[in-house]
Length: 329
Image (tube, helix red, strand yellow):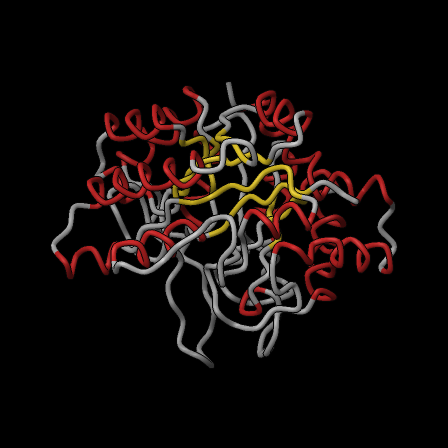
């Protein structure tokens, strides 16, 4: 069985929403796509659990993004701490591998939506202290740091934003993230912002849950240029299982298409640039990989399409581990 590191899921925010509504919740077993039982069945060693925050919804409620994410982070910690014999929070590759040796799963705290920092570096440090070790700059809204690519109406030309780069605040955040050891995640960021990140930084940059734009035209996917640059920097791209990022007009997230994106990225940037970024519990559309327990089916399709066992091992865990060792301390 291949060991799995998944760079992105939205399980914890979904549970937090249910918790605030008084519903029963369980990280051990639930109706989503990720729980501890299915992670063990699927061969996981680590899940990166995001603190996804919807700025639009918070604005309607008049809720502070930073206050919200602090509550979400504390909830995250209580859920992980509830099962100390099964899973533990990690901030380094070494602690992750130690958990694996003890037969335990690992959980890494990440941020999806740089607007939660409210443009203040002290908020970045506060979340670092809670264990955040990976962060996007944006989600689907402009914020103090930068801009996402524009939403495009069906049938309209898909033209990426190459004009609106990172704000001055965003540039200072990127430099500080690299200095203190938070992985810079370009998923959801527009092309101009990604360009700025490569100009400002020196080490690995990742896209935790993105695919190849050449195979699926959604602007959330990566251009060939950005795929190559992530590879040249020693970063990784986590393949996203959502059908909307796998194929234009698709109805279900097909495993075959996931592997086609891997093949494309391998040809552009090499096998070491590919990782896994399921986006589980961040979409409701059908997916052949219906949950964490199905992960070895992806390995079987990779074998069918010609990937060697050593290549599968690198995609499933070793490439992400290499980046963690390089950036996290």
